[in-house]
Length: 303
Image (cartoon, rainbow, N blue to C red; front, side, top):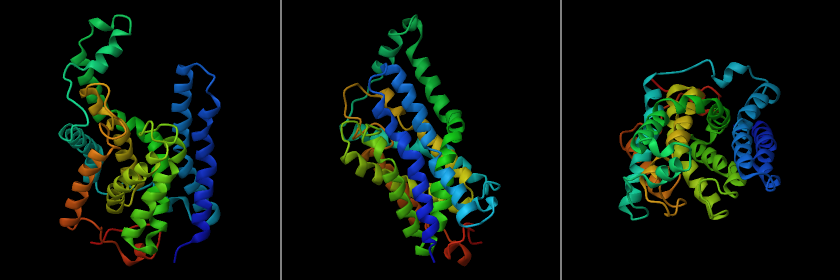
């Protein structure tokens, strides 16, 4: 049976922490644009810990369960961390290729966007633009995911560490999909201000829900196989690191709300193909024990 009290407290605390931080930039419009940009980055990064703090408080104070029930002391099978690190990059590349295939953007191997940014910096014209792009791509794939984990863990401790297992009495698919919808709606104040879908404050919220449901299926697959929120935190960190890489290779001026990043429809197709493979290969739904299906926070893959 679902613990409605715990879920209500979790969602209330999450919104109470995150949404004021998401909305704070609305009161900074008179600041210098650069100052505003850094303030938004910092505030929204802090907002990512709203779900994590809510998960900890609800687990300890409402459910009266030990801290270890959130499984931060567990890693699980290491092979899933390779999936978490590299799969977002593969899906991003496929999304970029579909963006080109559908004619949403055009390839630009002159790296016009990066070249313009370098020319605006002192001595930037002397730096080989191709080398800069290569370094940026390598950093995004290999190092940035681990840095991003610091904040991504805040979200994943809440969404996949607490919410997903507490929705398991509804059934695995229902728990995965509902947690994805809630995750998407949680972003609404940020999306309305231009996150991922600039120029589409209302449609963007619904697009974000679709994106989060698809990505949430993949993250849930990783978590259900490892019993650990760490794997989702790494995958989330990787997503945040590589999601916009295709933009470096496209001519400026295309509609970034509908192509070029992992959050847009061409990449949804890539994610759907991967999810389809998981289902056809019977990797999803993940077989779990009766204890997990009954809603225990600990989710055990069946052996």
